[in-house]
Length: 264
Image (tube, rainbow, N blue to C red):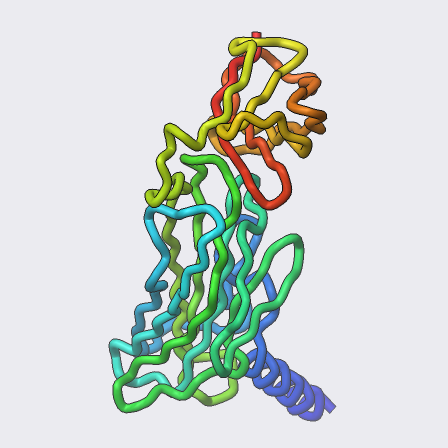
């Protein structure tokens, strides 16, 4: 009977691993709040070695711009049979920022826990070059200048035995920061806000002289969105915020302007 249970357990384990090879479970990137693939892939004493990276992620990120990101998996030991990966991109509060879409063949973008995951679907076979690439388009978020954005990536270099043993899991991360577009004259794009410093009310005039209707988003200097308020004909009744310096996003339709404002 024990032998039968063992055989059944091995069969179930094999089915699970094959399913993960086709499409990994979400939340295995090594990001804060995520775990890693080592829960299902033991890697003790494996000769397999590998490197995984993201190409195309900018150190200076322009809000609203679309970037093509390439996940590159390199079997440096030239002994892995299959390769897989999972990536997420996070900003303030370790939540999703921007939008990933249009994945390349054998990859997919899924969503869970207020995050997006770009991952293999299914795992790829390493060619003679020992390099596999997957691409995805990422549109940067509309966030204040200086906001840091971090990508987290985990890769699996598998021996192809459909068992838990002998694979290599590698994790890495990288980051960039939001900047204002280098194609615009920033001095002409800033709205006028007054009084500044101020307290209960902010008056807003856009660079073209109009007084907007829309939304005002208040960010700390670390990029955390701390409050928002409606804008009616260029007037914001300020939310209940402690004294300090904030970055205010003036958003009207699909256009945004950023300006620093001090609460007293």
